[in-house]
Amino acid sequence: MATTRTWVPQGPYDLGRTLGVLARGPGDPAYRVAPDGAIWRVSRTPAGPGTLRLRARDGEVAGEAWGPGAEWLLDRLPVLLGAGDDPGAFAPRHRLVADAWRRHPGLRLARTGLVLESLIPSILEQKVTSDEAYRAWRLLVQRFGEPAPGPAELVPRGMRVMPEPRDWALIPSWEWHRAGVDAKRSATVVRAARVAARLEEAAAMGDTAASARLQAVPGIGPWTAAETLQRCNGAPDAVTVGDLHLPRVVGYALTGERGMDDEGMLRLLEPYEGQRYRACRYVLLSGVRLPRRAPRFAPRDFAGI
Image (cartoon, rainbow, N blue to C red; front, top):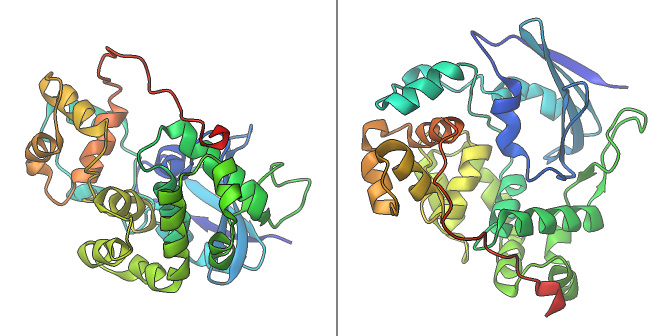
């Protein structure tokens, strides 16, 4: 039987835009958008696995949850959906950003409160294409996770709970290889899994301390820490540095110039100090993209090596 809760946001609210950053590709076993528009999430909470269905209608968001983690998920439902976020702290400083801000008034920054579920896929995304990382996450969760709690006739087929920390640490080397994950990334996941309890504490820390806690694990740098904190802490200033594409996209969108690097991007974002990640979200929502001059990077076939 499902446990339920309803949350009424203050002002405009866009459920899909708010939670969409939590999905790791269209085939994510832990995140689905149903044909009726409901969003399904599966998480491993401190109380155990839980499945959450969310539907926005008539100015409110209704949540239903199943499994041992159901109560934990619903207790934190408003926080997940952005109740603790303060979009009023943001002031657009560029015409393009202001236009996106006006067109998307319902955007909030989600806060899951769960570190590993954002950290591990972020590690898998290091230095590879999105398609490679999404495939690795999908295969590993399908292979080593467990079925999502809830009635089979309701829960979308194939949804899975990610493995427990101990199980991530016990994945054999050949399974990482089969999923296309090189030794450096798999070793980083294993190191993180072994200190999972300490890393989960970062969800209750300030952004600077949380980033330092994550980066204390070898293999986790500023890029991975920022990508994680954006989701688990809803950190509005956790701008991603070290990304191959973001500085170029931000630079082109705000100045029309190509080839922007991290230093240049951070200079452009100085007027948004404290809200730089949110500013980047609006840049990406603007739809402006750097015209492509070269073919996409071809995914590497680690499993075939």
